[in-house]
Image (cartoon, rainbow, N blue to C red; front, side):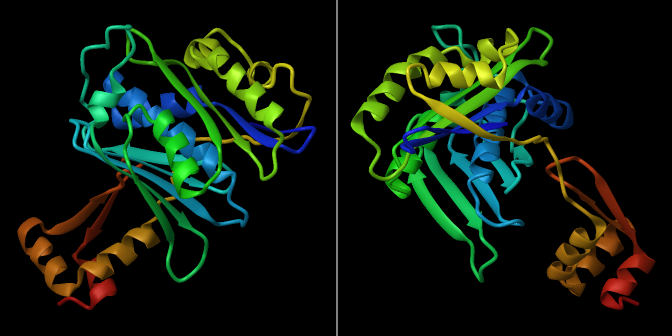
Length: 287
């Protein structure tokens, strides 16, 4: 991921080549093309938004809960941009739109976009809006404008090949900062159409620097850092143990009686954790 600032201090820009992140998600979740595009766009947006967090250990969650066939599309990113995600129905694949693009909007449907920020406080901060289009980028833009009062340009794209692999994926977020001059806002808006085929640009080998030059065409800017981000799940046996404790002894006893062991699969990476009766005894003192 490449981050930059316009030299007049008017805007900050995030550019992410998410091809490898999306490919890893496809392999983990075995997504069909439409589901791959939806999950990939949400992962990309979440990764960029994660790096907007100010403190180490903070996380941001994007949850698209629509009434479309995909169900809930979810992504969680940390402050370094590492991200993980899931989709309720990864098998969903709809006919393409009339322009040939994957119909992510119909697959997501109408519903609610929730942005949940865990800032290390007692309760996480949550902002919610109605899903505008389900195409993800427009919804992210709408969220920033109406929930955080931050004028934002967001472009996201995922190109899925005939065999289901990700050929190119990525995103750009450009945000105006307070008191930004109107000419910078106009220039960014005029450059936005250059990103209409963003997934194809990444698939053709364009670098983050080249994408940044497109959105900042005619605007002096300075890149200020590069982050190495990945699809990364931080699940652990200890975390699963805490979940099991939350279920309570009665529920665990019932599962043990029925199955002889408790099995939990991580929804983000697919890893399975199995607890036999002895391990459950240590957690709950079950006899």
